[in-house]
Each structure stands twice: as structure tokens, then as C-alpha cells.
Image (tube, rainbow, N blue to C red; front, side, top):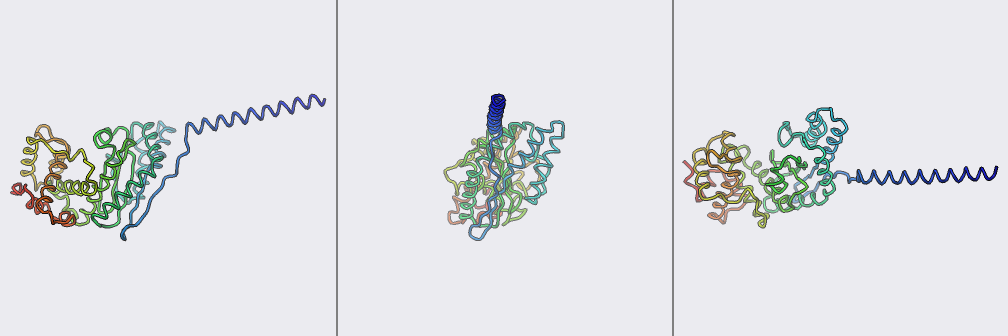
Length: 326
């Protein structure tokens, strides 16, 4: 009997040992599949009496991708609204339409992987943005600013391949929206923050007149790129590379004819390009930068604050392109 009891105890110990080993193996498999992620961090800081916030939306995107993966029959756009857009609206107080860049992804698995990588790099991303905001504020003081960060959708190849993995939109004098891909260039991220920061200051100074007509919109971009190059002179954005002499002549003539137009359709020809008219992509940025640089060269004593607040036709008048004014 004692021998039988001993065998039973030994067998039980072996089973317990095997169970523990299997549990450890399962834990290791789970860790390999789902690495422990850092918590999403919002960053708040002050500089020269102004308050800045960096507000990411990595976890909101991961909530969305997790939901879609577990509920493939559910509405993808509907889940995106609930899991991403509604939290974004609550945190930002922005009234955002369901249109690009605020649209659901069709490559959910890759979107999830990319977002996880960005979340793992959030300390670096936040520090780069913080540095760019402080550097921008040193050159051109302004009001409080919020920077919202959203991962780029994998299908947005234009941003990934042509814009160094970073794009930005400024909605008002306070709120800046940044999209970022895992392939992002650190220098370009800082440059884009400076560019969008200037937009916010321009809106603060000039209101809707900062982008009222075609000329205003073109110089809105030209001023922002001129400012970003002052803050980060070593960075050259692809959208500021000069047009050919032939294209420059075509674009300037088109601008002369439409400078006072408030048509978004006409302006988009400068932004998106119009092959039928011979207008290349990003002509608004390229020509706007060219004109602003001309003004700065002709008026070396003019401060950043002065030419930021200068009305478009006054800036044009002070450049070599004054003949564009009818």
C-alpha cells in the first residue's frame, strides 16, 4: 500500500510539473504573439508662458483594429467612427467629417502592426515634437498649441513614399493634426511641426484672410515653408523643390489670372497638379515658397513676425513677382 501511495504521489508531481511547463510555454507563446505595450502617453508642457499638449491616438486605433479583427462582419467605417473618431472629437473638440484622412483602413492587420511600432516609439516621437514646438516658439511666439498624432493608414502610399512618412493639417490657431508612418524621417517630422506651427500663428494673426483666395492660400504655404526652413535650414522638403523654368512660367501666369479667385477647385489645380494645363503637383507650395523667399531677400530687415502678418498682395508687392498683381 505504501508503495502504491508513493507511486500516486510521484505521478501527481509529474503531472503538476508538466502542467507548469505547459503553462510557461503558453505564456511564452502569448508574449511572442502579443508583446506587452507601453501605455499611451499625453505630454503637456509650458514654454515662455504658453501651454503645449501632444495627444496621441495609438490606443484608439488599436481598439478599432482589435474590434474589426474580432468582428469581421461588422461595419468597418462604423467601427472607425465609434472607436477612433468619437474619441478624437471628444479630446480635440474638432468637428471632423468622415473623409480623408479620417477614414477607415482596408489593411487592418498592417495598420495594427504599424500602430504598435509607433506606440513603442512614442517617447522618441513625443520628444521630437516637443523640440520642434519649442524651437518654433523661440523664432515666432504665439498662443497655446495642441498636436494630435494619428498613425498613417498603410494604403496612404502618397504620404509614405513622397512625404517621408509625415503629413500635417492645421485647423485653427490652436490645433495641429499630424499623421505619421513607421517609416517617418525624424528631420521631416520636426520640419512639418514647424510648418504647421506657422500656419497656426498665421491664422491667429490674419484669421480667414490667411487663406481667403488662391493667392492667400499659395502664400499661406510659402510662408510656412520659409519659416520651417529658418527653424530647420538643413531640411529640404520635397514639395519646395523648384519648378522647371517652363513650368514656373505656366504656373505664374495661371496665378496671375486667378489670384483673387476663391474657388477651391481652381486652387486644387495648383495643389494636385493639372496635366492638361501643364501645372505640376505641389505648384502652390513651390511657387509660394519662391515668392516668399524673394520677399525675404528683398527685405532683409523684415522680421518673421512682420512677413507672417503681411497681407498677400503686400508681400507680393515687396518681391520680384510684383507684376503678378493686376
